Amino acid sequence: MPLTYNLAQIEEAAQYILKHSKSKIILFYGDMGAGKTTLITSLVKALGSEDKVSSPTFSLVNEYSSPTNSIFHFDFYRIDDENEALDIGLEEYLNEDAFIFIEWPQKIGGFLEENFQKVDIITKDKNLRMLMLS
Image 1 (cartoon, helix red, strand yellow):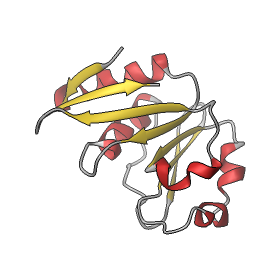
Image 2 (tube, one colour):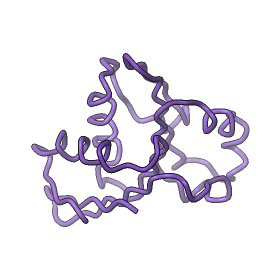
Image 3 (spheres, one colour):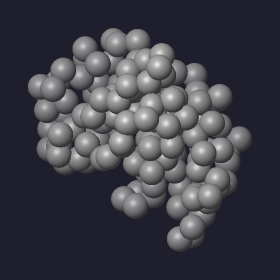
């Protein structure tokens, strides 16, 4: 069932994802500017981390700590070849018992299996987004 939210409701959207996710590995799909990093920031906070969240656009991966788990945040927007993901150790990360949030997962589709949680963020208008989990 889709969830519609605005920026003031983003913490509720994060809780919705955590409650309904079938996996700790969550793939975020959405157009540029849809709010993927903003939503991931709320997820990291909801998991109890006090770390400052930023987009790992150039580093490809950021690690955050929480009271219970490590959290890894990937952004594959800038990669040209999915093998670049292997070069940073993606397979090892995917085998960790950690929350893993991946932006632009379509860039590494060859490495993703079916047991991940897919989150589509659809821009309804300037302030309104819709989440669909599949």
